[in-house]
Image (cartoon, rainbow, N blue to C red; front, side, top):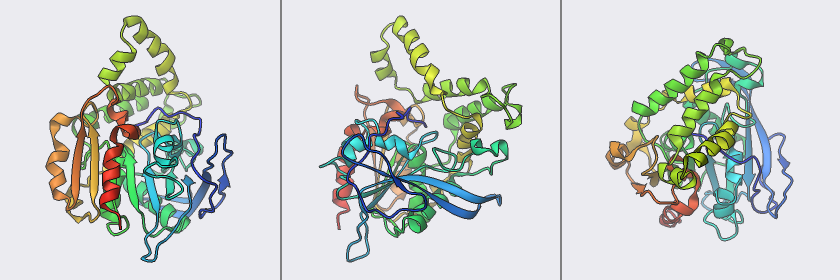
Length: 366
């Protein structure tokens, strides 16, 4: 789920000599900490359904310097974004990851850790339908995305071990898949705001609704539109609704006038810069997600965190409580609703759940 991210980079710590894939560059830094931006190109990428792309670009950001200890373990941390997001969202604004976790003295202080922030397939500056292929772009799924993430980490950045794998929403689901697909590659896992079962129930239906709104829009034209179809805004209005937080929203919109003003000023911006095919593909990519059967193969300790006001992963269905027992070293935390939580978007607020990350890091110290 998109985090309604700022486009202003809150750049992270330390000028670093971190490993770089092709076309890497240092971003200009308005504050004291630069991040490294680059693109790793995978030739002849074969998708899960057999489709091919001669060159798959995976764009990324890194913060800090890669180090390896005598046992071959690195200080690398992989953080994966949600649907419609990008690695850039973790660099801004200050109350999110960079300003809280990556800053001096933070739990993921970039003077100590090497932080990897990829743009997934179909997102950010990685290869995506809007680059030119439109609806002829390969129909990627979560397995393809995780495969490409691994290629960036292992082949592009030459990291063979991860101190921590974590992610928000879609990145949360990818975290479960990393634990199952590469069980010996990480020390710890922290999935934020998802369920470790296939996407079903209301979570599946709202995605179906959004996809149907886009494809049934008269101006969608089979994906070959010249201007963004009308249905894109309606689909994103629905995304806002399912990802919203009733308590917080009431506090910032206590009157009908305030709510109307919010709608005009805020929701009108949600579709800005988005592409209908990119949105459609991103929503459809969750179709293969189903980690439930292999949860017992995860070796790393897991700290799964959801929020009680998350309408996408509602607590009353008790899914994670049921499934976490299958994980050898698993723990689940359900955050109570407070004025600080933001529904599904709580996943990007480490001030709310940071103490659980601290516990996970402490429990997995070598």
